[in-house]
Length: 444
Ligand SMILES: Cc1cc2nc3c(=O)[nH]c(=O)nc-3n(C[C@H](O)[C@H](O)[C@H](O)COP(=O)(O)OP(=O)(O)OC[C@H]3O[C@@H](n4cnc5c(N)ncnc54)[C@H](O)[C@@H]3O)c2cc1C
Image 1 (tube, helix red, strand yellow):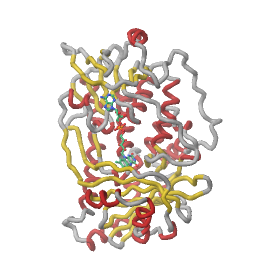
Image 2 (cartoon, rainbow, N blue to C red):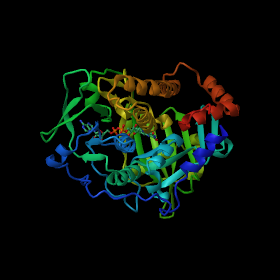
Image 3 (cartoon, helix red, strand yellow):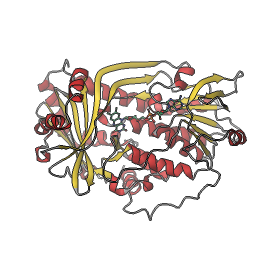
Image 4 (tube, rainbow, N blue to C red):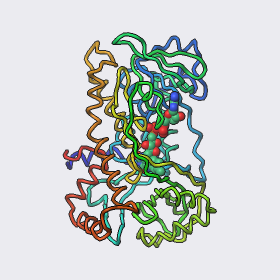
């Protein structure tokens, strides 16, 4: 265990400067991601696999698989805009140690500006008058997680992809997918601009409405939480000092995540999983009125020192669902990321699960025997087995927590408070929980 923690500490520290970054060789033949690849160029590039999807899971997967020597076409990938210097972009993620390690191996983590990475040194969770605290020092890790903007990770992925010879980025979306006849055959991928790409393996990283998943005939089990996840940032009166606050309240699950100070101002990011009608109400408020509503929860969050909160940017919201694909693989198809599973954001684990899919798929394909096809069903089944336990465990745990603290919960508040206090009093249980959330093997 100590050895694994040491790895996390060493590997996951964000760099203070860019000078320590491993140099990457420029690739003069790499087409610009801004444009779709020229058909003449495409015909000379016959990929081992096509990844459908332009999000973080897809881009990380393209890099990881190319680094194992595979030739990858990444479909639907557009480069993200440059980060504004004077504001944070809306979406921020809590990145766990396992994801951090993967991004480091892909030479992506060192390219994220250190000034836009906030290590989480403690986590305070309050509900029903009880409190549960996690502390990085007690867990003997450098940080419990790292808060980073989605765009900052994506910009670093774009940079690394620009140097990767094995990846061809293509901005077009897939509009139709057809299976070629024959047991070992692959897929024809028809693009929005009328081209057809052919590859033995198709990786579906195309999000919740995944065309790949539907084309492979993979059904999903879906539960609608009838909630929306509201996200916005605030300037606060005092630094959150690396502490993430979360409360389970009548109005839903409210989290304030620490952000690095911006132009000397302390900042936090809100993730409020609110029941649908309340979410609509909150979305209709002015920025100042929303800040006041959040401020009213600071005592419940144990964070009154952050008041007053001032709005700092726009508000976004997403419907919250648990959606699990019944299978992660089919003939010549593997699913990763939100195409495979969506979980409640209360534990900040959705993207982390997707990145761990990437790690498992790259590891599985790298282990194939000489001459073994990338779409060999035995390989794909091995990938599915490698992911089954973690995905199910996390989806079940987040679901159970969401239901436990829902307004219509069958468990009375005093009993929930007892559970939270008991957990807080048991360092070994807390250690297992934080180890599990890190994504690293928890019995290592
Ligand atoms: C409020 C909220 C807070 C969250 N906080 C966290 C957190 O702190 N930590 C965490 O780990 N996770 C968090 N998540 C979860 C995280 O947002 C998702 O898990 C993650 O964005 C999924 O990434 P993805 O690349 O798999 O899918 P997406 O981001 O959905 O990307 C799918 C991509 O595929 C492209 N695409 C779609 N169809 C096609 C097609 N036919 N052809 C080609 N491309 C296509 C789309 O354009 C898109 O670019 C949060 C979620 C919510 C709602």
